Image 1: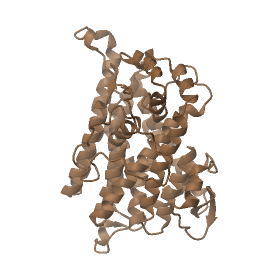
Image 2: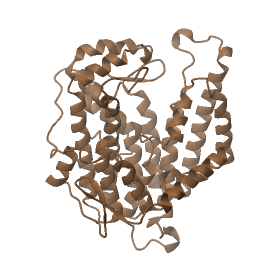
Image 3: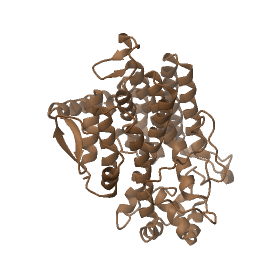
Length: 447
């Protein structure tokens, strides 16, 4: 069953490729056109105007990713095909079927992976594009190079590791707390499906993490090993920021007083650092962060994904033999791209005039955090979720955010991080891979 599904997936991708004409992607006013040469973009007034408008159509996101996948050689979903076809993963998929109908949160995580949700795809693709855009030194042996794709074999392995780590984190998030403090020690024999689901989430995530660690070790690079290990640590620390309900779902912190307003000048590209620019293998500095909407949001998502993507991009440049200053710029690019991506995702529930019945959204999303700073009274509703976030009236929160400044401030936040990422790209040679990265960032504006 699992094998036939993978084969059908492969067939769809191959048919899609065979039907696409060969061309180079470039942008004119946010739209994709066929061009015989790569057009150089910058972070000047023209690009800022593109980021500030809605000229990029929604379907351009799929076009940008599709063009980028052809540049690096194959679709992102093929990155981890080796471990997807392994006996261990096949067994996990088989046992996962037993959870259907149990409403275990792992099923939601599995659905996200199967349907390749925009929140999860393209991390490995970004690593490969950065690798190809920056190139590598000439002294690297030919046997280490994948000349057909323009990257190193080690960089391709790094892209797979990045996908596996991100997937393992998502699978681990599917764990369910079966006993709250008040009910500790109770008999759980009636929750056999939930216990089984927890075992699958724990062991499945650990299996992916172990494979990722093993693959990093085979690269035989101590500095890279330390860098990726620190990304593991950051993902773990992301689960301990701020308030949480009994299922470890995050809750926003009540905003403090005398907070600094979010800068609306897009030319102000001051980095929201947490000590990670000096040495990003050290734990991040969090003093004074919790309770400040923008800083708290940034810290949550740097730890929860931005650190992984940034360090993967930095590691790709390290494998390519580039100097440390450029490696650090790779980290800055990946981190801010992830934050811009997250800001786009956070806005999605608030682009609808009404919230669908039963729908929920992240209570630590940027629009909610910014609105709480504007209207602290709404925090009374948030406090109802101290035991469970399901006790919160999401419709009430949704309407309040729509009537406040949170959505507009999130758009500004997203543009700011996009411009930081684009500024780093300007330091790379003008290539089709760099243009593909720029196209993804521009298309991201209307995800």
